[in-house]
Length: 120
Image (cartoon, rainbow, N blue to C red; front, side, top):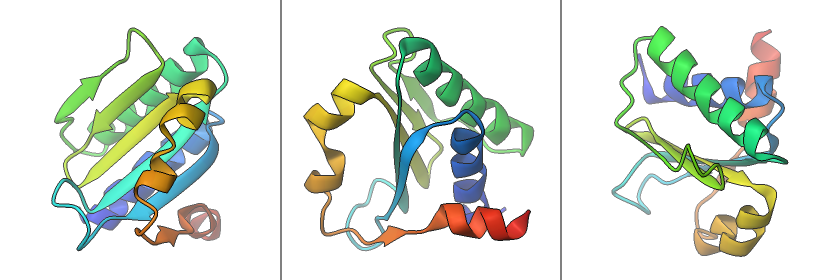
């Protein structure tokens, strides 16, 4: 499967668990870490864990390997490393504090949610 399909799988899984303010950054040519960063947040520890778990479960179900899952127990900033797609699932306060969107402000955003809606 392509990186784009992996990205769509991750974003749809986050959206299915009601992640808020899902942003996709195209990191190609900006970072060697990944092609895409997905940034979203939940409003409680349980929701943050549910979002991260759904992303992990859907990725595995679709044949993708989870490279790393960090921060799950604390549920403040969970990093789901899928290789070419890295998902950052924040608790609301941590997202505002770290503000990755500003840090990676030179990366263009992509409207992946619209793409997912058109596929349904």
